Amino acid sequence: MIDLHCHILPGVDDGSDSLDTSCRMAAIAADSGVRQIVATPHRGVDPARESGGAAAIRTAVSALQRELDRWNIPVRILPGSELLLAGDWPLPAPDSLLSLNGSRYLLVEFYFDESPRAMERRLRAVEEAGFVPVVAHPERYFCVQEQPSIADVWVDRGRVLQLNKGSLLGSLGEEACLCASLLLRRGLASVIASDAHHSRVRTPDMRNLLELLSDRFPAVEAELLLLENPRRILRDLPLS
Ligand SMILES: [Fe+2]
Image 1 (cartoon, rainbow, N blue to C red):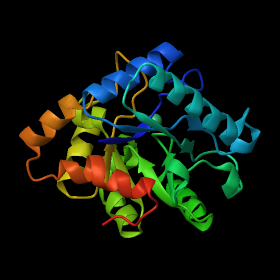
Image 2: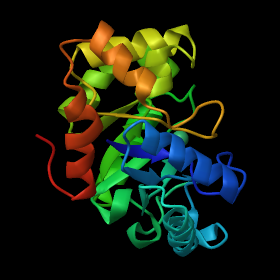
Image 3: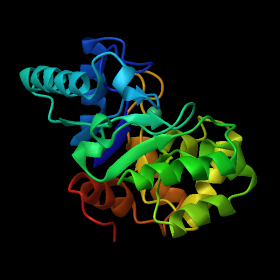
C-alpha cells in the first residue's frame, strides 16, 4: 500500500514529535503492509513565509529516510505537504508549493466550517496555478456532511477526493463516518489515507481499515484506493 497523507516528519507540525516516534510510525505502517508514505506536513497559504519552506521538508524527508534505512524499516518516504486553503490571497508561487512527490497533485485542506463558495474559489486558484487538487478528508467538512452533492461537483470538475481511514473507522466522529461511508459507496473517493499524526492514536496502521473494507464495503476496490490510484498520483499520471 501507499499512504498519501501522513504527518510523519518529526517536529514540523502537530504530527510526530520526535525521530523515535517517526520511526515507530513507519514500522507500524510497514507491519500493516504500507511500503511508501508521503510526508505531508501542514502548510499555510503563504509557504514562502514559513521557516525553511519546501527545502526544509525535503531535507527532513532525507534525514528520516536515512534513519529508517539504518533500522531496516522497509518504507520509502516521499516529499509532500497539506496546504490549508484559507486566509490571504493570491496563492503563493507554484514553485514554493510542495505537491505530492512533485506531481501535478496538490493535497489541500480547509477549515471544517469553510463555506462552499470560498472552497470553490480557492480550488479554482489551485487549478489556475497548474495543480490538480487532492481534497483531504472531504467527509470532515460541515458543508459536505450537510450537502454531499458538493462532493459530486468536485469530482465532476476533476478534483481528487481522499478519505481518512479514521473517518471510516468512526474515530473522527459519527458525522464524518456517515459522510465517508456515503462518499465511498457512491464511488466519489479515489484514495484512502491514514492522515496519521502519532504512533499510539491516529496511527498509520492500515489493518483495521482493510478488515472494515472487506466486511462492510465488499464492492469497493481496496487495491484501487490504497495502491493503484496513489501510485498513479506519485507518478504524475491521470487517474483511471
Ligand atoms: Fe492531515
